[in-house]
Image (cartoon, rainbow, N blue to C red; front, side, top):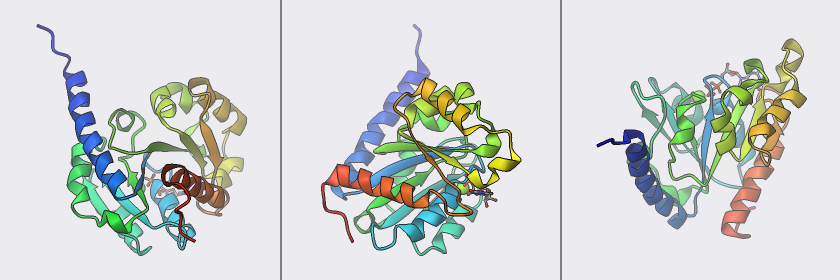
Length: 223
Ligand SMILES: Nc1nc2c(ncn2[C@@H]2O[C@H](COP(=O)(O)OP(=O)(O)O)[C@@H](O)[C@H]2O)c(=O)[nH]1
Ligand SMILES: [Mg+2]
């Protein structure tokens, strides 16, 4: 008898993810699974988002790393609720880890919950966490051909943030090429150009979050 272990693992994960999703929906949380390679700027974007969303939507974060609480420490300084998950050797978060983290968050005090996944362009795309939407970051120092090499994560994501555009002039990264490559795998992919250093594109990102929140919950947005 042949057993497809990977299919079983993903199905078991999906069942827990469905449970997480019910909890999120009952607490009126819009939930994002934020993915990228290490260092693309996930935590930097969340630091920017914390201040830019103030007075509009209440942000909360679950952050996954192999080791250290460094990202949670950075985000706590922004005065938002943060839970750090340390995965040891696991290269992605799974739904069960999120289920455990939920008991440490007051979800009724959060409108937008962002789950910062472990830095990795492969495994995080395969494991649903119970999120509404997957968002990924590609930074301009990583190369404009990455959508061709790692198509799954680009196909799974609804929004691609191209970060570190302040560094464009120092790289051989071509924006048009990167976007064309990304849309070869995902024709409807939404794309935003951002710099977490200069703040360019951050207000468009906040508008995108507010629109997604409104689409999920109607007109009940704050401010
Ligand atoms: N020049 C530049 N550096 C950035 C930008 N965003 C993040 N960084 C830097 O990139 C490094 C990794 O950022 P971090 O947020 O920790 O990435 P993460 O691993 O995806 O969470 C840090 O040194 C950041 O200061 C950006 O837009 N421009
Ligand atoms: Mg980080």
